[in-house]
Image 1 (cartoon, helix red, strand yellow):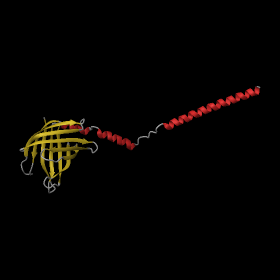
Image 2 (cartoon, one colour; image 1 turned 30 degrees about the vertical axis):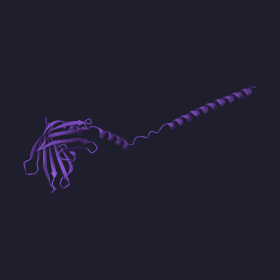
Image 3 (cartoon, rainbow, N blue to C red; image 1 turned 45 degrees about the vertical axis):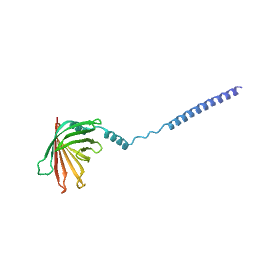
Image 4 (cartoon, helix red, strand yellow; image 1 turned 180 degrees about the vertical axis):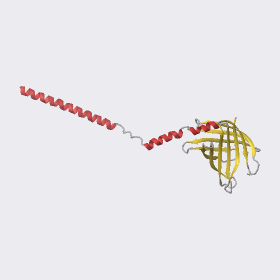
Length: 214
């Protein structure tokens, strides 16, 4: 009887050990299954990270946009136009109202004045493109149906911005190169010089606008 009792106790001990081992294996399998169910998050590559940073920077208002603030407000303008290089210029006057929009990303300028016997109504939009690292200027008025688009780079040494673009000659329909130099004399005075390419390939100064802040 004593031997039978010992044998039964041994069976019970083996059964308990087997049950504990089975429960332990089951828990290990459950943990492994949960680990497999969790989504694998791939690490962001350096190229993708740089792209995301560039996208954010492209949308931001940067240091160059401070010029748009300087050019905002009310200005009194004297406009000189040369039809021929050796002739006296036609002198006219205008007023310009510049207003920021899109949280300082762009500046819209409305100009009202007189060119000879014709009233002048013009609009100019300025901006700084963070992607191109250039100033952009869009101009149109009531004296024509063309829209002029220019891009410019700043020269900090001369405190100038040189805008380059093209327009079409109304007679020959050929493209003409236009260069505009914006001289920022001080926060209260800005001088814009306009140069146009002639048929001989030479460049002549055709306009000058002196803007004084009111």
